[in-house]
Image 1 (cartoon, rainbow, N blue to C red):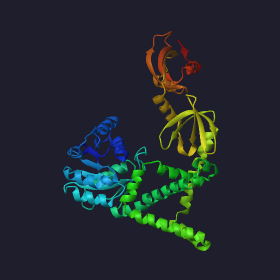
Image 2 (cartoon, helix red, strand yellow):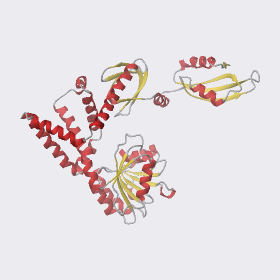
Image 3 (cartoon, rainbow, N blue to C red):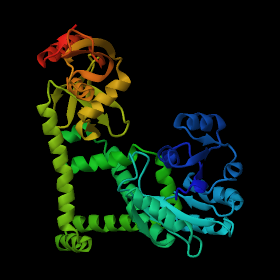
Length: 441
């Protein structure tokens, strides 16, 4: 998919969401142009992520070999109708919409006969770090993707994606459950909790692991783009049947309880469990999620008084400081500014030592020093660099000079240029160097 003469890619609507994610993650392999209606925003984002920008969709695709439509669902068909007829010969037109029937029909109708079309649906959002292990649904149209489909599959396999190939109709049917019914259920749960005027923070004091997981999943939905969720509900017509069935079943089950019909209530649960037919795997996966939360709490409790880095799931904000207190649902962290920040444990990931170091490099001013040390001449530069980097406070180091004409033929003077976060650590570094046999000049 990345042959030299086929690296020109245009992403229609590539300034935000999945379109921007694709531009950022594919720019090393493709010559990418993004478009948007807002010229100032488009130019700014293109410069920020290092790709080309064109405010005219038709101009932007004139020499493109790969054209990807990444616009809101409600604008997708109209945009395809306006732009697709101008696609150059031999190009492939794709989309990333979460509905496929109408979009596939539009691509087939408006794309020239001498182009190919491969409708697609990446089953992930712009928060994922890369393509690895991500599911990509492809709904190719027979006779319209003979040349490009194998190459697209090859590219996805090379990037360790999981490919699902199906029809647009089957895609929309399953998406009405995977997305439509799931989103609708979680949004309804959030609205119900609000309607009941429940103090969610206080409710966590009484919560079971399942309740905590449920709140986290509900939050994951309602904290993101509500317009996208509305579009999915509105534009995938299969979701109407799924929503109504859920409402009907909820009323029916509620009436069973109201009428004290224990037998039929139990029967519904038993029959539903048989239909799911995934007991062992469901328990295994849910146990894993619950155990991960417990392990996180235990690790935080063991780290009181120590430095840690925490990254918030939804804001991506990173907090680095000393863990001062850990409760069943929250952690208190004291930052370098001596502020205490309380965070919900379920909303944060614990950063590795390497991630903390990288964050510090980008956010804290470093202190730089030069240190001249006598070591045996036979010492290898690479070995000394490795030794110096193993000194805990040291961030980075290089040898900027080596003088072999010092003292006698047995020793050389090595000058190290190194960096620290805290000037107070300079004495520790020098003591360490002396402890391993170095003589500081």
